[in-house]
Length: 417
Image (cartoon, rainbow, N blue to C red):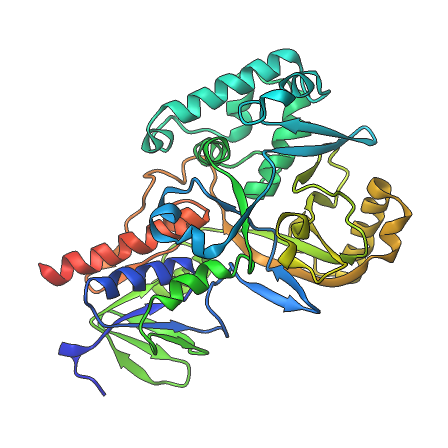
């Protein structure tokens, strides 16, 4: 066994935060062991292959404007496919298209006349876009905080556009249909929508962590290794093995980090996703559909194979229905989802084949108003012991990778002190 003087930095958890942390440490010349209890890298960002379909573990997209993602990931290597810059809103028994008039000027009039909000709402929407894109990104996370709903009300938006558009949009992006989360996070996500694209990689969202993992030396990532306890200078594995470490970084989800480090549990927001195989796509465009009526259980829907054809085998389509909350009665959930979608798309839904249901208890950490203060919470627990994860920054792919970088930089700073 290695002596303490040459022991590696041990990173616990091979999600995006852990991978980003390990990558930065390795680039700076430190030996790293990345221990993952599961059977693959990615944490919550993974993709399964089922009957020729690519199933992301829950509804997920990459926003190309994420600044950390742009600096860390090779977008060309991911072979990204774009959603159209707009949405379909299901309301009043029909689908209403809202298109970004900045990117699709030809659709400006139709969007202005769409029965989603008032003409004044459309002007306020443009004003909000200008506000979130005109200030430095750090400024959004230092603005006075409140709930997203309170911020929209203060901006003068009508109840109609809040309930038909903003609520399901927030449900799809932040798992927060009630708009109770921090307006700072809402502004951040809205800015990412405004200045970048929503995309899916050719090989699924799991290609993102896999790309990060390939940049680590062989043997760095060790799968199926469960850490039961951590301390400065060592970790203890399930079964009792104790491994020495130059430093320990706990890069797990919030509840696991709270248990290992004795920190406050940041709380969890749950989500579910139901996948179907269809012979014919219910929508033949790369768009996200929002439930503007709030009839549920589906908050938003898309056909990933219309975005990236690799998500389905030839001659088939993949339908992804996102549901808020973790529903444990799978048969009842699938039945309710199918019934709702039959109202949307007709009797063809009855022939769709259910592929899999994902129920994710910890889809993201809770981020109520005030939680993002300070915007970046400390990653140094005590000398030799560090934390990383989106619960320390913001609940996003970007936040996870930022936290990993910050934890690595804290380790490096202490190592050189």
